[in-house]
Length: 108
Image (cartoon, rainbow, N blue to C red; front, side, top):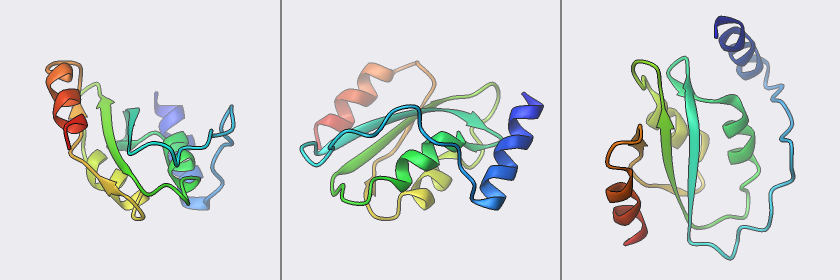
């Protein structure tokens, strides 16, 4: 866990983000994308930043959901900072009440 955290912090500091395993499909056909991530040192995992960087033409909404081993820290604020070009809806922490959250964000 600590080694992953150190590597992620270094990647963010240098801007040398890891490549995604698969190319992102055309997302312009969607109004809403749910983006899941673990919390790494109080923020989204570094591959999520790489994904968000590639959403240059997406004009819809994003809704983050996330898991953590303690506290979420600045996860949602950082997620919004990493995706300034889109509207970010309120996120959902953990798996409790996930069904209600999905219903709420998809009804917008």
